[in-house]
Image (tube, rainbow, N blue to C red; front, side, top):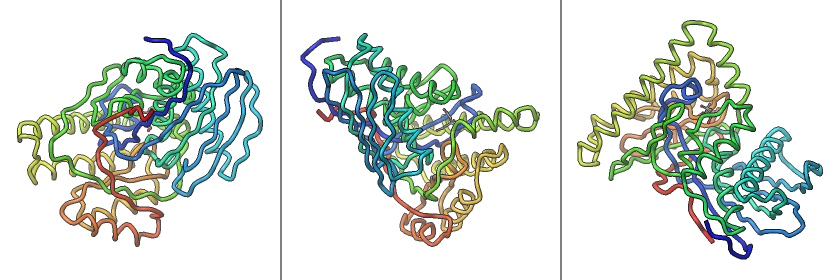
Length: 350
Ligand code: MEV
């Protein structure tokens, strides 16, 4: 750790998809998240009056802005043109990141001017909050001359997310966003997986909606009183085990996964989607997009993240455009885009 003069710092961090294991990971099962090249960029300028001011734009694909000032615990009402639930959530994550940065700096009155620019739709299952929290803590601490080790950054980002989600958060989103690439995550252990040199890209379908992660996680918790839901959660963990095995098999194939191996990954994604539907976290729009992608020839497709609305991820075979077109004409689908795996996690921009 070094202490320099306070100065502007800018960091970016990637969003993520789940290849397998969302929700089950909250109950101690294995998950395989994978970082994607859709980033949140956070610029932090130190302020000497102890205040925090946040302005954010592009927090959803349809763009909106959030501005508020914080002095101690008092928030001024935000000036916004976005659904208030989403804005409230965004502010809670930023506040939680500020608390972690102040704690790391050992300076409860450190002031920040924070600008968030994000390419990741909010609450849509692509890890927008984790990316903002990771990049935010990194930039806010560096602005005061403190460089956190990646392990500590991932840990603090997890604590920030978990505080907002009343303890119902796994380390998957924040670890993956900090480290980049794919990871194998269970309750306590997070490990980066060796990426094949020929990394497949994915197609995302977005219904323009968002789910409430906290409510969806509690819903699953309630349904765990049914033995069938409990055993489905365990089976999701087994599927994640297969996906982790997939990365090892790809390594054996010199990092160039064969067609058969890619089909295996697609199959695991299909099974995982069915299991997520079974525990009640999919939505009609997500199911429609999953089916559209499959019928257009995807090797596999699944919802990603907490569900209830948001995004699906499809693993294409051959012509990506066919799947993109099929999603574009699916009534439930509002946006379609292709994403590459982000091999780098948090990145220092300035
Ligand atoms: C949300 O992106 C994924 C969940 O598994 C919650 C979590 O892991 O914190 C639903």
